[in-house]
Every structure is written in C-alpha cells, then in structure tokens.
Image (cartoon, rainbow, N blue to C red; front, side, top):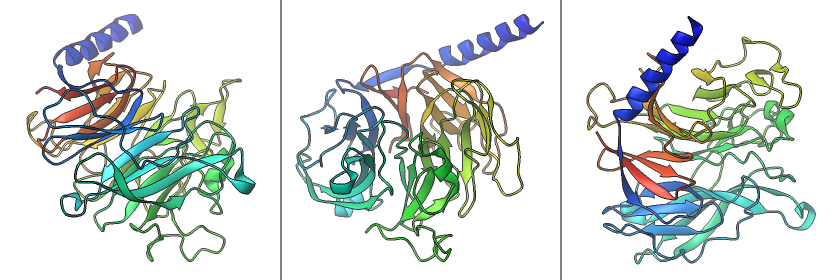
Length: 366
C-alpha cells in the first residue's frame, strides 16, 4: 500500500510537471543568482562571481559586465547575490543589491553580507553613485549562509534576509548581532523609528525578526505581508509569514537534523514564544526564489498562489495561499528544470525562472 501511494504521488507530480512548459527568454549567464525586470522588456541579472549584466529587450544574450560594481568576495555560497529595483525606478533609476563583502583591518580574513544602492545609467552600461548603506555585524570567517534577499515594503523601507553564517547559529537567538535575522532599513540604511527592537537595551536597531537560518526567498505579498523561506539542515526547510519582533525558531525549534549524527535539532515542535512555520519541507528541497502571482494569466486558480524555486529538488512548486495559511499541498509544476535560483513575476504577469546551472531565464507558459 505504501509503495502504491508513493507511485501515485509521483505520477501526480509528473502529470502536473508535464502540464507546464517553458520558453527560453535569455541564456549565457555564469552562475546567475538574481534577476529584475527593467522597463521596456530588458532584464538585469547578477552572477555570483561578481558581474551584473543587462539583457536588452528582444535580445537572447546579456551584454558585458556593468561598470561600477564593487569588489565581491565570491567564495563558497557568497558573491554578488540579490538585486531589486526601487519602486520609483522609472523616475530615479535606483537599484538595491546585496553581496558578500571582504573584511578589512580587524576583520581581515572574514566576510559578511552588505547592502548597496546605486543608479543604473541611462545607457545601461554602468552603476553610478554606488554606496554601501548596511553591513551585517559581525563579519565572520566562513563560506556559508549569507541569506541576501531584498524586498521593498509598502512604506518604502527595505527588508533583507541575513543568514547565521553556519557557525554562528546560536547568534540567531540574540539581539546583539545580525546573524540569522531579517533586518529593515530605510533607503539610506538607517533603522526606521518603528522597528520592533529599537528601544530594547543591547539590541541592534535594524533587526525586524530573529531565529532564521539561511533565508533565500523574500516577498511582500498583495496584502503588504512579508513572507520568507529558508534552508533547514537535513530537513526543516521553512516558509514563514514574517512578523515584526517575532522569533521564527532557529535553532531551538526546527524540523531539521544534525548533519553528522542525524539527531533532531531543537527542544520540540512548538513553543509559545516562537512563530510556527506556514509549511516545512522534510526532506529538504533547498528553496531559493519566492514570488506571489498577482496576475490571472494562468487562470483564476493560480492567482494569489506562492511560487517557490528549489535548488536540490530542481523543481518549481506552487503553494495555494489565502493570505494566512496554505489551502492545499505544494504542487510540483516543473520537475528537473535545473537548479532554480530565482522566481519573479514579470511586468506582463508571467512567471520567470532563473536557472543556475544552465544559465537560462525561462518563461513559464500558461
């Protein structure tokens, strides 16, 4: 019976995957990490090694690297990571991006996630007025768990995910550092006056929520809510509705297991002061990229759903969502499409996927 049920589930996933297909929109990227749709049909894409490129409207391949990108520490999971456009980009040409920054002076040999703003020049060949507006504290030695997804909230502030750098996991539960946190800053990098821990003694003012491991998906939904997903260890990948001032559990409440011993991490499944996940994946899918579909180009049933890319599972998942909970099980839409690093809804309402290993941007057909 168990074998029959597993076969039926696989057939169901395969049927769903076969119902979807894609078009190649652009190709020729080297380990791409994030993409942003520019007005007029062009795409702005980051490559983890440190290059940022524009695919002109109607073209299939990107142009040369933009000038003005700051030096990037491209080691392990680090490098040039997320990029988003300012909500008023059409007027100010402002972008925000995050990257792994090499430590200097007392931090020599260490690195950390940094957030920068810049202006894309009119020719789309260079970044101008580049300024780092936020740096994760402390910088650490290591090559893992940088987080680094950005979303502009409805009030114009910026939220950004920060990993706990693997060896710093216990710091995700304390307020004197940025490890394992989601932070919120204004567009100059300052902490807004209504941040939840601003008046807490010993807290860093930028902290918005705590208890995260390595969040690599972040989106503000159509209701103005902040949603994030993150990697767990050997299970326990989570989708969270992020709330100001709340603790999202890592590493005290988790479904994950220790890599060497395989033993359960954490004190239990629930705790009153810890926000439960909307969904958890065990085994891990290694989620990366998160989008809410606000258009109806795929039909009314998909509108409002969340879409999650997966690196390990190499699959695009649809999660039906009513604003407070999932209303059904995740649906596998594209199986073995590649290491799916980013998911965005384009200005035309279609879903676009950034595939790390093939170097493609794909459009999901209705």
